Image 1: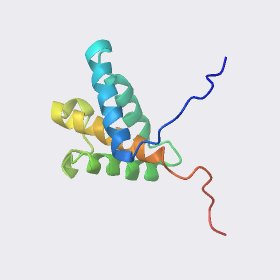
Image 2 (image 1 turned 90 degrees about the horizontal axis):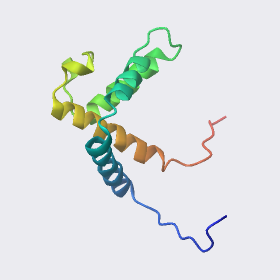
Image 3 (image 1 turned 45 degrees about the vertical axis):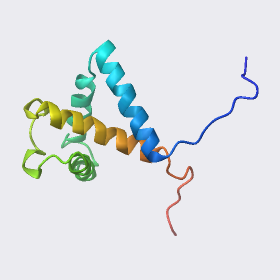
Image 4 (image 1 turned 45 degrees about the horizontal axis):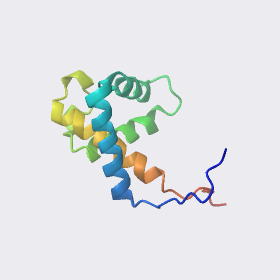
Length: 111
């Protein structure tokens, strides 16, 4: 059954980030953190066997940079990051998630 007359509200990137961070805090409070998933994601992005490894490492560097984690810590195991750095990392991932959701739907490569 469809909801008739349902209205949607377009959220700005900042509103999306705030919402994602708020939801992440609630998840952490009631269901525990999802750090295992974050570690799996980072491990997958660092996988040297991946054909896109160079691009993946650049993307990870951008995420760490956005989280304001010093360059000398980008290669460390996530367990070596401080709690504040872990929080910043999740917030940076939420920032990217929010912005990517606003990308144009049909991006084409130029000829």
